[in-house]
Image 1 (spheres, rainbow, N blue to C red):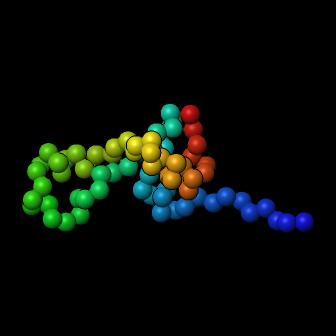
Image 2: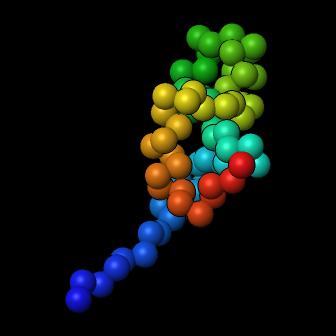
Length: 71
């Protein structure tokens, strides 16, 4: 009889993404590591905040965070 392997959470994804109570995926903006002199203050501020991930890419994150499904 084949053994069933349980689903595991990807720890790298757990550190980078958060799933809200309504099921949205939150993430930090990309591009805030280097070359900051050429970017405006407004743009850098917006990258610092958490943002809602688009529905197009949301299924990638919810697949690797199996125990965070809420909503």
